Image 1 (cartoon, one colour):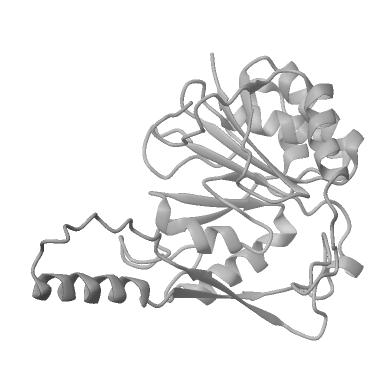
Image 2: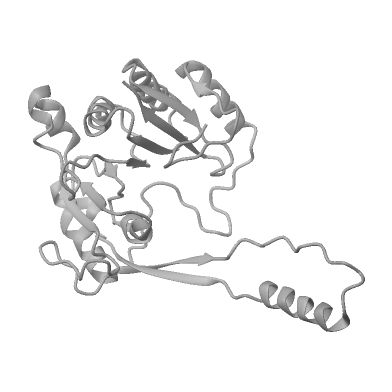
Length: 291
């Protein structure tokens, strides 16, 4: 299945039953040996290095290899040498390294109460890492979170894009000029009457625009927040246009099952598991809202 925004492998079957989907993903998880404290230093949700005020994160991007066109054995020696040189140049291309600096609140786990989740429209929140890394792929990118986290979000965007502030953006077209940081509390949205919810959540900066993509990254871990999360996704999305990409770490089975049940029971979404995108214990679901 494909669209102008997301392309899924041919033959991808929709998820229609939460119990069946949970059985499949957790069976695969239980059959896979996991090294949770391996050489990469994976510590799970909530790990911070309390000795550092800032973290440096590097992404190494390598261009996909291009297939070498077949050559005839009757080509001249000079052209063969040229082809060999071109192939050697391609193979010796150095990776492109992107480095992102993130400030962190070392006291957050001791001093802040409540949830620290985030709902995203072409966005990510929390520390703001995804908004910094992916904003170049979008026309506009809005990162949302609860009010206590907004200063850290804005600090990290400003740390990586010169001239960025909440009220003053870099010149149009320059890196970071398309990023906005806004408050969104799922539970506040849920408490509002349905007719008032559209006035609460942030809108795209372009007039009359609707959100193309909603990113939900590691937001599913506390059952008390699930009704508000599902209702928020439903409210900000537009039938026939909006896709949601949900990335989950498979922790408590009952919590993930309840999330899928609540979402499927809305009756307005088609869900597809995206196999091969991430290694277990992470799972991704791509979902499109329909009328």
